Image (cartoon, rainbow, N blue to C red; front, side):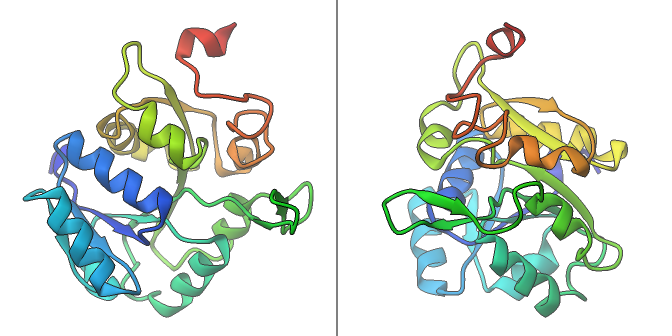
Length: 214
């Protein structure tokens, strides 16, 4: 099966989930939408047109090859437990950032300063599933506004499985960005919020590959 034909499900339809789903449709990729509120999935599928369809979370995971967990870091951990059987053999995309509101209008990290969501989730991944850290190095506004540019802006990804590179890079390209691999899941902290490769960290904005080299 060509990587372009692998079925993609987006679980969670907040700012990131809606944006990724919209980008994929813009990139001519079919997408399965699911949320704990089925009416949200139905409404977005209707708005996005024939390339999008809505269903419940369990069915979406079962039908997909690639499952994008566009939900809070803590919710991903719950979904791993709840759908451990359905997630076997799936490629799980983790765009999460381990943050919560700090009470003053900003965000704070909810795990240790030297810990990453990617590494914590790696230890919890259901048997037979493969984890990729991707689609989370930009905020929702930049994911929506900076895609499909010329030259393309960069999205980083990390994976311990090199055999997934083509699949993940195609997914990122279909989102309208240029993929850049930063290594294994142990590098995830760099592309999470406050990290050196995150928009809300040292990088400061969406960049092209040539800007990144500078």
